[in-house]
Length: 64
Ligand code: SF4
Image (cartoon, rainbow, N blue to C red; front, side, top):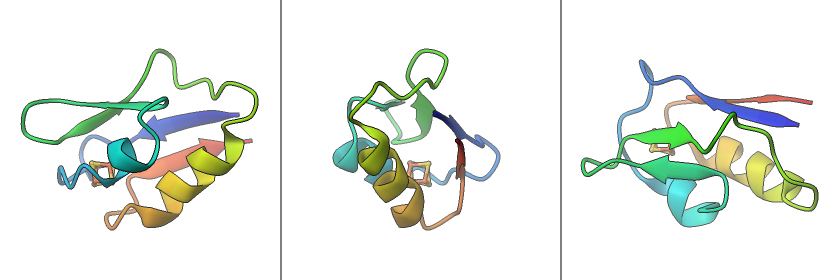
């Protein structure tokens, strides 16, 4: 599984990072990017889905 943040859509709510700090990083303004190449380590799939479901901008996509 892989997560990806569409930086054009991200509005910097910081929500993904608070839900899944293992998968996302945020800059000083709260804008997010996926950590590394976005590969979701085994066991964190639910967190990835939770973060995507809670992004108000629908900026997080998941590749199964
Ligand atoms: S929850 Fe969505 S809009 Fe908010 S920082 Fe994360 S990717 Fe960006």
